[in-house]
Amino acid sequence: MSIWDTPGRDKYYEHCRNSSHSDLRKWVDEAYVKVAPYLDNGWVDNLRNGDFYSRLWELELAEWFILTGTDERNWFRFLYRVGGWLKSLD
Image 1 (cartoon, rainbow, N blue to C red):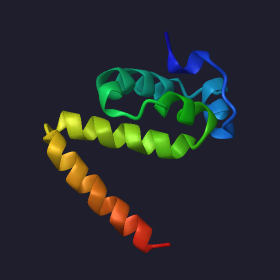
Image 2: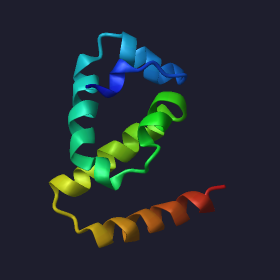
Image 3: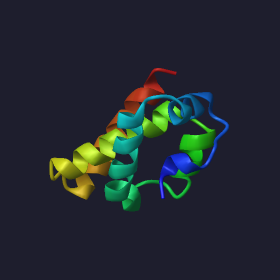
Image 4: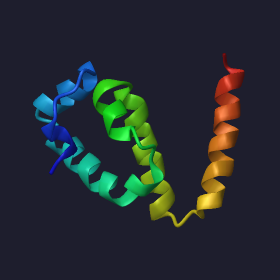
């Protein structure tokens, strides 16, 4: 089963779902299998119906952490720093 089998409300998700971006769809499906245990419970719903590009970034970052062998504890330190930095931009 593919993430892309179900329609969504996010216009960017629907664009990628219904376009010729098969390489992106394939990557998302394959990466999701690897990193699903580390993602939020509502990640797929948010990809389809919320903030498509933020969820793609989250998927890419999680996959990068796994591929580079980054220890899970360091993920949280990194994300905490990035989150603090992003909040300082408000």
